[in-house]
Image (cartoon, rainbow, N blue to C red; front, side, top):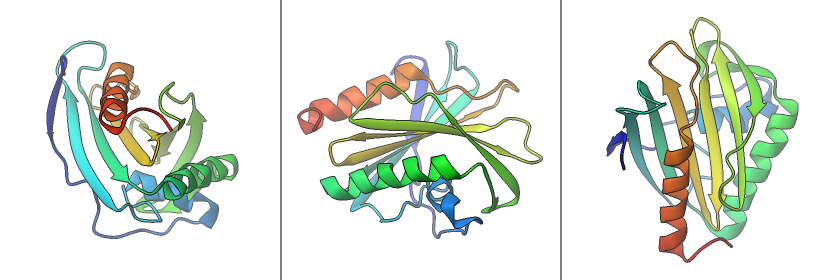
Length: 170
């Protein structure tokens, strides 16, 4: 894809971490790419922006295969978590504030949120998109000092490719 250098990414961490309060656990699970329930399969990539408006940022992409009900449960759990979770302890040795932001206009269901961890200069941006039985995780971090912005062209390209391969939206 133009403007991005794509490389492999180890898509699944080696263990979970606890979030307190527990209402924030689905958010923390996505931060570490360790969703519950676990996907049947997961493939990861990282896209480094080499030019354009996202230059200096990196977006990790995790494609997670579920059955339809499992994929829907992941998104419904995240929606419920974002309604209750404003900050939590766990995962990193500092308090993390959570803020829902505009979701990408993609897939069958989507959401997005920022994680601002104390002591970190810029928040990370996480978007989760469900297309059929596949959940796609995008985590963008800025290396420029400017706030992280989800590269819409990257999200659109990845979701369109997935929908072409899988035969479209559910």
